[in-house]
Image (cartoon, rainbow, N blue to C red):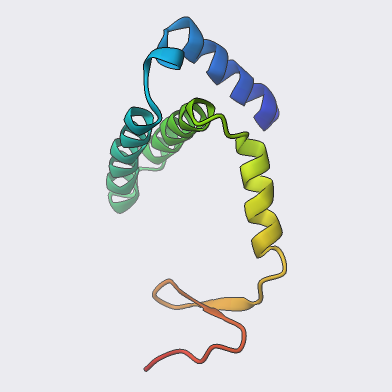
Length: 106
């Protein structure tokens, strides 16, 4: 199943449960933040199954947030991709991304 179909399924589910229109973008975003905490916990404990579940929950909340803000999530992702696709650089050990031409700080 592709992303657009899954997104449509989530939105239909959310509408049937009155999440949309009765929730707010702020409430759905805060729910996503809560789910990110669960994701962090699962990652730190090496629990891949729980991490997968939390990632899915985060995506559901972000889909709802975008819908409540009237933002097309696929277009938002496409815009982000257009910004980064030609970005050059490398990830250093420790998780720091250094753009090409920027010297890492000692």
